Image (tube, rainbow, N blue to C red; front, side, top):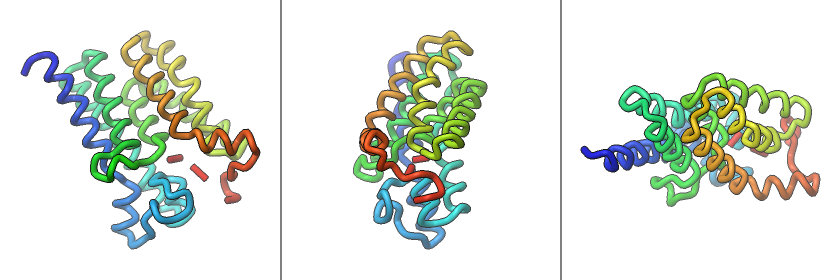
Length: 203
């Protein structure tokens, strides 16, 4: 397999793994409502939490993170070149938000984003999750916490890795994450976004 095909394979493998919807599968196996039919209609951990409970939400959250972490870790073992790792992570993230198995209608990508970032650099991933937790503790807004984390994570990754391939890829993922959260951003500005524990998204 030549150089170009290797990279296409890594990206495609990541995309196919990322396209698996943990939320939909978890809810189906546990006899819960399809997350696409209730609440925010988003197949992510927060919507599952609100309509399926903590156990289903934790399974969804961990599954979505693993969708990002596993392809990146596998490619790192096969080919530690930063560009190879980057395309695998980007593929997994795109798979989650535009899944081929579900007519390209997926989640907002936060948990998978964190999983990819942990695979890129575990310290940067931990920092991003701590930022999420701190922001959530202060604001009680899941979406705002994700947006703050996604804004700062590429800078943290650059400081810790000094690998432009990974940092630029993560910045691209952050832009996509912001695009997927555009309705949340509008709600935040209008002070209509639902707060954690009150009754909207680690999706």
